[in-house]
Amino acid sequence: MHLLKIFSIISIMGSINGCSFFDEKKCAINTIDEPLTEDTVYLQVNITIQKNDIFRVYYIPEGKDSFIDRGYIEKKIIGSNEPQTVLFKFPRGVYLKQIRLDISELRQNQYFKIHLVKFLFENKCFEITENFSYFFKGNKFIVGETNELYNFRTKDMDNRYDPHFLSKNLINVMDYLLYKD
Image 1 (cartoon, helix red, strand yellow):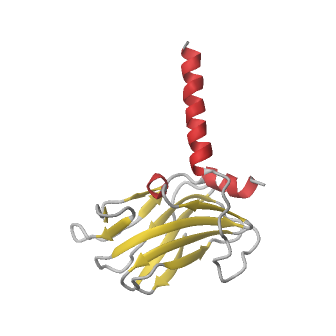
Image 2: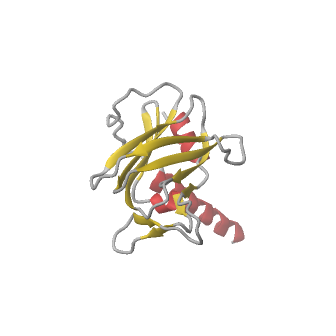
């Protein structure tokens, strides 16, 4: 009886992980202006952000345990009321263990909406839309707006400002991109 419960739990968890997040739908990878470089992971973020700012993505490569000061990619964002796509290209051959999305580097209260996050590798992609909050957790400097899903604002607290989202472990996502046919 005990063995049957364990098997049931493992089956349910496997179906949740296997079906919900690693489904077989095709992602559109033709939205990028530049061709994808071989053996390179990309992160594509579709975001509406109203003020000019700097968007950084810190990363921990597979096999490492922590973020390093120079382990990030940075893009300048032009504020707009329209969604915009920001593409981050990681160093060739670097596979991600975890990332941190630093949405706003300039000290300002900022409203933004995340529409889509997509990991790309060669001709494969892993798209995060409805399940953003499963993969990313905001810190105390990010407040979720209650009127609509994935609308957020940044805030400073105790004269500090460091709004970011921390990802879950991305090893399964990288394995999916690297080894899925």
